[in-house]
Amino acid sequence: MMKNIPVPRGMSGFQDLLNQLPDMLFTVDADGNFGYVNRVCIQVTGYSEKELTQMNIFDLVDTRYQETFRHKLLSHLAGEYSPPYEITIIKRNGETITLEFNVSRSETVVSPELIITARDIKEKASVRNKLRYLSEHDALSGLYNRSYFEQEINRLELEETVPLGIIICDVNGLKLINDTMGHAQGDRIIQMMGLILQEISMPGFVPARIGGDEFAIIMPGADEIKVGTTKTRILNMITQINKNEEGIYLSVAIGSFTRSSAEPPLDIVVRNADNAMYRSKLFEQMSARNNILRTLESTLSVRDHMTEEHAERMKEMAMGFGRIIDVNGDDLEVLALLAVTHDIGKIGVPDEVLFKNGPLNDYEWEIMRSHSEIGYRIAVESKVLSSVAEYILHHHEHWDGNGYPFQLRGNDIPLVCRILSIVDAYDAMINNRPYRSALSPIDAVRELLNDRGRKFQPVLVDKFIMFLELTQELEINRNKIM
Image 1 (cartoon, rainbow, N blue to C red):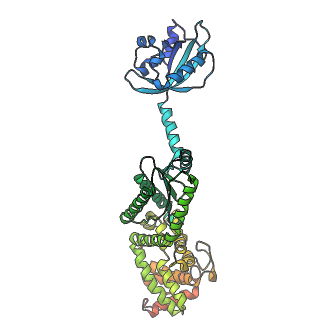
Image 2 (image 1 turned 90 degrees about the vertical axis):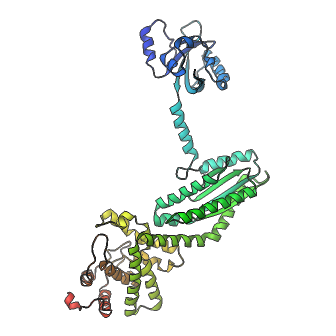
């Protein structure tokens, strides 16, 4: 910005320098008539130098800004300082452009003159608009954020808007989805809700994400019928998504409240809608959770047929072995359920790890090992599986304490887990894996004996080999194997 420097006349070298500036630079007298204009003024406005020097600045200023700029002009001529400000002008072709004006008063001439630099702020305005958008919107869902939601509530309260409806939505089981299938799947759920609420919103509505799993719509001018219709549309779209989207179950508790007079404050309207949503959530929660769990289980079966077949083989073998070693009725039922569900946590293991055609590296093993904890989180949410949740968590603990996730040792490992670990290892070895071919039963037994006292309880390994011999799974005696 140039301050207190009159534009020299007759100094061609200096004028050449001014013509190289990236911004408009011009002078106006006390009446607003143009004096000097640099080359950028000509490029921006579309007028020639001769035309501009015969014009008044108010010939260019948009009528909406003329009164503001007239007051600014008088204050500048009086020598008052003003920070940069925005003025919109009209170009020769009729287009408008918003400029940032920096103005100073020349003190070296008898008649007061103003030196003005002006810069196109299109890029600055674009950045400002983006920042405003980000400050008002939720990045993940694309909806308004809680701050904007509350601002709109306050504004509509002052305007005493009537009628006005509020809908509150809460996604059921989002934490379970995040914990089991990963945050990417949870984010997908949030984005779906964002699309639904944008789709059903009318002009003037304010759809917002007001919490991690909570959404709201402010509906100015909507009566109870309109609010009810909107809720029905939301539920219909959710039903359609659950029919068309594989591996996902979207469940949402919805509550609403409508203000038909200005008497109840809007914060009470929001609270009533929220209470209605929680009543819906309590009523639907168990059903929604069970549906989510069924979806997780079916998704695991679709992703990994080997896991489904493995589970059935495991159930049959574990129950047979359990009966041989006199596992009682209740524990036998637990063992059977654990045999089928112990790998349910693999729903949260990415395909590139679960189906890798080769040995896993250290990082991939860390991901794979997480399936026991993911399985535990799924099981504790289910009435059917809660009884085996702890056993799912510990089914990869080792007799010598070098297993995971808690490095339990010896008899601290639940009996059903000690049994399952042997059955699981044997079944895995005698069946093909993406990274190796199946071993023969004899070689698999050799591996069990190698890990006797390390991964597996010695006495259980001995009894399992006896079980294999009794069931003719292994038609060879132990001495030959050794």
